[in-house]
Image (cartoon, rainbow, N blue to C red; front, side, top):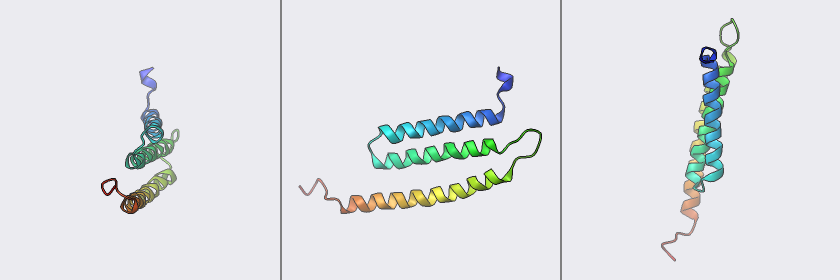
Length: 100
């Protein structure tokens, strides 16, 4: 059984586990900052699945999924920065509990 654990299978299993952990955090945790982190963990799981799917039998790795992951990382960083900026603005505009 252990001889069948190829790196592609281990990457796929890790990607599925990370996606599940991120989904669980997105559903359970009420804090908005932690929800943003959970979405990032889900994205890392998807990136790992894409990288593991790039390897094909008896040929070199397909470069298209690797390029998609690199582009996805850039988009994820920009999306995270935007989400954090919006959370900060919402918290700044919301009436604070100290003034009441």
